Image (tube, rainbow, N blue to C red; front, side, top):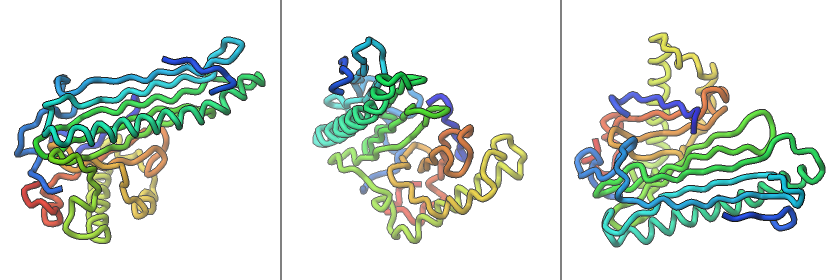
Length: 267
């Protein structure tokens, strides 16, 4: 979303509802990259949209919601993987729609009682951002307002094997268990933050003084994804820095964790 702040160590890195209803693989840098973050190349995917307004009987809109998600075209990757990946993304889009439907109920109630100061909204974009012969990565960006002073931004991800469409976990990437690889990832994030602080960079002052306390508890579940330059780790607003910092991402170069990776070609 608009306020997502990216911190990179690597070189780059309609419908209307009434108120009453309401793996194993190769290094991504070594294989053929079909689609990478920031590219304008969109041939491998088709964008789907699910737009919905929650309109009260008085005609006022209590909440809006837009869910956009990419669908892989035939031939984008190994044909055996496409159905499983598309089904998983469609499942996530359906989950978000159901979540938005539930979220609309208090908005509708508040509007009916004349108490809704600002219409709610729930907008999500699920994008295919990295496709190779080995991996397929989707990111999910969210911007939600359900009352209060400001919206909430979010960023999560889905990492798949391009061979069979299996969804990957962090455990799948490493030969050691979480008790070994998580401390290494946390140490790399800390190093990047402290490097910025020592260099006097403006964004180095964003972090809480006790950010390390929160870092120790972070497992990065659903908040990591593969890129050409390294493993990207995501932190939600308020997690290690104030709301104004937005969503924060750190890219850990593959060579910094090469000894822990299950596939030694990575890094």
